[in-house]
Amino acid sequence: MGFSFQKKSQYSRHYIYQTVTGTDNPPNFDMGQTGYGRIDNNLFIFMNVGIPGVDGMDYKNHYDPRTESVSWCAKKKTHSGQEQMQKIINGDLDLYLFARWERNEDWTYLGEAHVLSYEDNVVVADPEGNETFCMEYQLTCKGIEEDLGKEEIESGTLTLTDSRPKRKVRKKTKRKFKGRGKKDYLLKAKRDKKIGDLGEELVMKYEKKRLIDLGKKDLADSIEHVSMTQGDGTGYDIKSFNEDGTDRFVEVKTTKQGIDTEFFMSPNEIEFSELNQKSYYLYRVYNLKLNPLNGSLYINPGNVLDEFDKEPTEFVLKSK
Image (tube, rainbow, N blue to C red; front, top):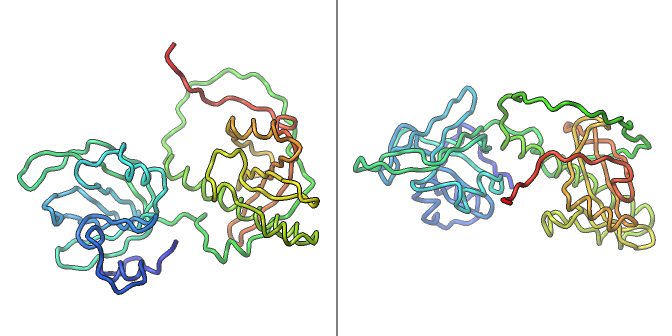
């Protein structure tokens, strides 16, 4: 959910709460008095920079206006094992960041924030000078280009092609133990998820049109976006239908790159395609463009291992 806050504009806590909730009620305790408050899946962060908070804690928060990068300390005694901290790390909460540099001023909106990294056990001092600890996050308030609005998504298109990836001859190569450089893995994961979500939205629209064009509007109205309604773990993303009303289980894999780009599948997804190969379809969305939203599509029915090789990339180790 997006809100109409403008970067660098100032807002009171009361105004923020009224805007988000659509009521004239005064803000609850977290939104009105503490460092952050949650409403639904939105977390509103109120960050003091260079001044102690209401509780006297002097967190070493920092904002760089040139790069829009932020160092933000959560409340004292927070750690990455806590449920709310996990939701922040995993991108399950949308973060709206406000800051102030003077005690009596309103809060300047810095933007929607995204987690780059985090650290546990960062030492801070309480008002009596005693040391305690908290979590510290490195955030960016630069926008994610894949974060499109509802109208942009609804106007997106897919073009079905007869193309298929080139078959590759697998050569056994010697493993290289070489550094890959530093990456913002949490931000990359968030971008990858948004790309995947866009692909699924395009396929939902494609499937509804396919069935309506076949004169099956009742089936089109019954399509279920399973990854949204039931979450991950079902082995597929969308439950659609064939013309005769039988189930069509659709797994969507999306990339901004070309048709030959490799992709990941979980063991659960692969096994589901093996067990349900007569009703299973892989929808590969490739060459995804964002402005305007469009992409190419090929459809691979049946067991994915009939057309693709699988290669292990990591293992879970258990004690012997």
